Image (cartoon, rainbow, N blue to C red; front, side, top):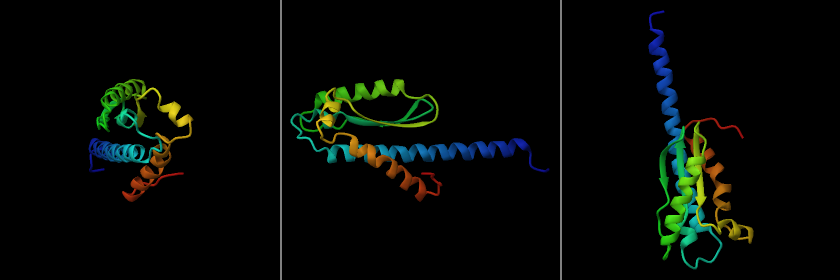
Length: 146
């Protein structure tokens, strides 16, 4: 054998790291699309803007935040922005410290109540996220099992 084993293992490790980055970037894009879907597809009447302003996402790799977004104010939704960020940070602290994770949240304490009343807050984004990720991963050459 003419190639040192160390060179082979370094190359394999670099390839694995690159694939993790591609997956993380794909989840960041999916997170952006989830926010878009949740904010635009919400079926409730927006009185204050707080609920839509509280919607955010984060992508973590082994417990470290790669990217997050939760700061777009809708109407007069200042409270939504701050509550959304607080709630997202609390979910980040509780997230798995292993692997790559996408978290999508609505930070107002009444978001679940609004969904329970039959309105769409995050459910449409939750339903679309797997398809978005599957489509993106397939388009860049990853084989995805259903």
